[in-house]
Amino acid sequence: MMTIHYAAGAATRRRCAVVLAVGALTAALIAPAPVTAAPATAVPPTSPPPTVPPTSPSVSAAGADLVAVAIDGETLSVVTRAAAGPARTESATGRGTPGVDRQPATVVFGPAGGVAVRTPDHPAFRFLGAAGRPMWALTGGDTDFPHLDTRAVPSGAVRGDTIELSLGQVAGPGGFAAYTLGGLGQPTPLFGTLDAMPRTARLPAATRTGGLVWLFDAAGEYRLTLSAAATLANGTEVTADADYRVVVPQLDEARPVPADTRPVPAPAPAPAADLARASGAAPGDGVPLGADSPSAGTPARALAAGAAPAAAGTASPLAAAAQQDGSRVVIDDGHVDMGPELTGADWTIRLKDDTVSPAVWRELADVVLHVKDNAKITVPDNADFPGAPGDEVWLLPQGQRSGIVWPGWNTQHPSVVAGVRGPVTWTFAGVDGPGRFALFLTGSFGESEVLFDSSARLPQRLDIPINTHAHGNWAFSEPGIYRLAFEMSATTSSGSTVTDSRSLTVAVGDATDPDTGFGPGSGDNPGGGGSGDGRLPRTGSSWHLPATGATLVIAGALVLFAARRRRSAQCSS
Image 1 (tube, rainbow, N blue to C red):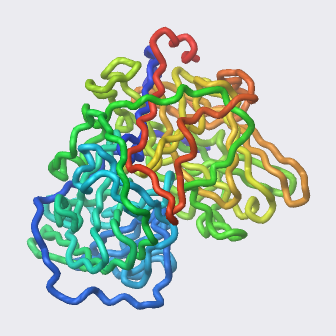
Image 2 (tube, rainbow, N blue to C red; image 1 turned 135 degrees about the horizontal axis):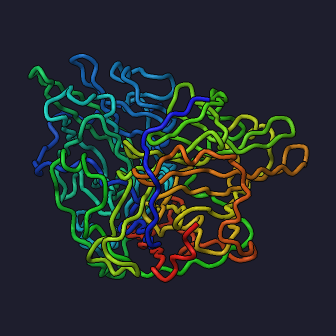
């Protein structure tokens, strides 16, 4: 069988220390957002509000490319793309794939699918105004932030590889703010109508940026215009406008919130090109709050909030189209999902590979995920971490980042949607590898939650609803080969219990040869041992709330997990 690989070299072993810095300041832990705000310029409305058909369908922003810029010849365009849609050059025509690419003026965002929040008393979020103000965020919750997408603007197509995205006219009952979350959760304001907000942001070409947040401070209907502009390599200036319509539900009254004294620096603009090249968090992006120590876990709990289920009883079109493939591959970039498949009485965990078209369901034994050094982040010097400042951790972020593999999980295979009743129970049995592994979620406006942690009592279990697709942060403390032992089980429509155990192999670090990771793909690795009678590791209480009246503070906890040097023996293989 053919083996595709990218890196070679011997795996190294170092001391075991890991810090998973999660979601301070509303954070989804993603790469520093490759966008930057341009100097603020007042742009008063000069024409009537954009016209939007009153019968426009309501669509979800969860995981969507909310603003997708494309270029076709000398034509620039702005579309919005549903979560399942890949970047397509033909988006410039405004058509794209049916049901995926849309003109923003033809759809409505909200009032469902958002999150009600309150502004925090924190210097990094002063651009949002006074603390305690009720606001509403157009976001899919904990696992599916919207994106800015310029992948259909190839490198070299525009001067400076930069597109300017400006906020034009805005009609609505209140204020609007847009920003991205990057690094250890530091916000980068993009544009808005609030006093401290700029009106123009610079986006790098050929890049997809996650962690996009749109905030509104009053209930009602908003109509806003975004304008994209760039200069082609031949000097021709091109522009495109797009009209968006957002409906915001009723908000609670403002109330005081406790002061947040974390010494996180306020956001500072940086050149777009520099941010686009950034591969890790800079010191000073965040400091920890206290977090509950991971405790041993109990029977499975449900992951209901924030996952992105498709319509009940209907499989995802991409899931349905996926074929099986027996070739061995190393994947170091693009989207993949682990999930079960039911064939007759056979229940098998496979990996859905969306890096090829059409998508392919692969055997886990035929795949190695390669986490290269561009996924490495460094513990900030000014953070009060239990580990030493300067320690490094390899992180596959919850939001997609170009050049890094983006693993998720789903229960969307057509055979599962049609043949299973109740949730799929996902069990983490352990890890065979040189360091510590953890999988965790970060919500845009709440506390972070650990799903699996190899240093806590095992096994650990999680219930996943049928027809769900979700992403989290995958973190590894040391370079080398990791074999993550997983089990998935469910009850079929006939009442039979089906179970499968497999290992997902991950090669961490540029110096690690991913080809050495190919093996049987079985789930026999014992991992950390322990009992499944305790609680799953998590921090705090459930933090995802519906947008109808419930509110929460925009500053999430910074969750810390650190393996001290004295525990290195526990983390070595």
